[in-house]
Image (cartoon, rainbow, N blue to C red; front, side, top):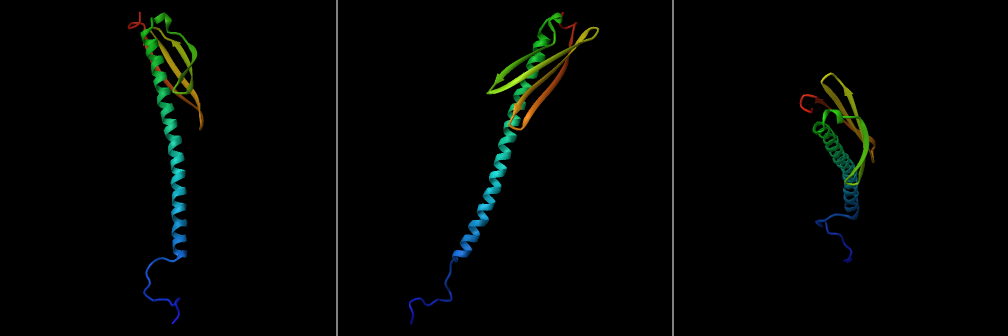
Length: 127
């Protein structure tokens, strides 16, 4: 009787089955890594877009609090949370109001982005 005799009811996995399962799991984890990278980019873009919206609304509120004569066009830059935002404020005159359009631009890992907001400033409420 040989000491290497095979028993028919041996349970367990062979090395080939284990390697195949490991390969399948590795491919699945690589797919999850790609999803993680995309979600990280989307989170970064969402954060920057939220900050840009905040900056645009801040500029519009600044014009609403100003006297009507001080509602003027202008450009400026601001840095928030490590992101440089470029602010372009355009004012269009009407009879009793001014239209304030604010475009906030920044560069992200996905390229140049911008957010635009507009509002009317009335001469009646801002003497």
